[in-house]
Structures are given as structure tokens and as C-alpha cells.
Length: 160
Image 1 (tube, helix red, strand yellow):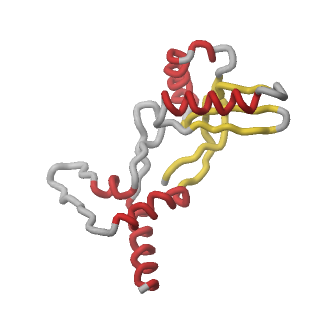
Image 2 (cartoon, rainbow, N blue to C red; image 1 turned 30 degrees about the horizontal axis):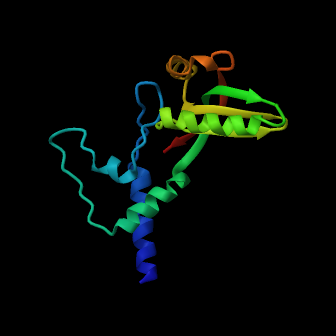
């Protein structure tokens, strides 16, 4: 039974990974759909529909392990915070991460520490233009961040 499940999962994982095509939204970021949604989408009305009849646990496993399908490439992010204030920087960084995640749920927020600096960056953009376009939207929402916000070249995470 375990071998059968493993075989079915391997076949499904292989099909899902080969069936995915990176799609970008209007500002150059990957759309966030799980593999089952991507396979079920029809690009033309004459195409057939795909329906999944499976245990919900399989979809959960695939979605949770989708990070295995992610790769890192050279790209751009928007840096919104950098501080080396010994007592407050960490707390400020994580508070800002929460605010940004609430306002921009479709964009991943990254908090990092590289001694002595805490940094907060947002987004995974292929081009500097896409990062700058998003930066303009971000600054329209958070004008108080204008002094510290700029685009940076970074390793970005993309779904294959």
C-alpha cells in the first residue's frame, strides 16, 4: 500500500512539475496558484476540462511541498528597512513585516539579519522596472518609508 501511494505521488509530482509554466502578473511577479489550479485552467474554450478526484490529503502534501519546485534566480526586491539599532531593530523589522504582509498578501516579505543590520525586503521581481513599479505602489501606501526604500538586486524565489 505504501509503495502504491509513493508511486502515485511520484507520478503526480512529475506531471505537476512538467505541466507548470511560470505566469507573471502585470508587475512581473509569478502568479500564486497551486499546481492543481494550474492544470485545471483552460486557456481556450475548446480545450477539455481537468477534474481531480482524490483524497484532499494528496493536494495538501503537494501544496506544502511546493517549495521543492521553487528555484532561486538573479532578480530584484524592494528594500524598505535597514537598521543596526541594537535594542530596537529586530522588533521594528518584524512589525514592519506584519504590516507589509497584511497590505500586500501576494508579495513575500523577507526579514534578514546580517551583522549588524536587520533588513526587510519585499517581492520577487525579474526586472528592475517591475520592482520600481511596485515600489511606487508601496510608497503610495506607506509614504513614511520613502527615506529608506529602494530597489536592490537579490536572489529571488520563483516557482517553476
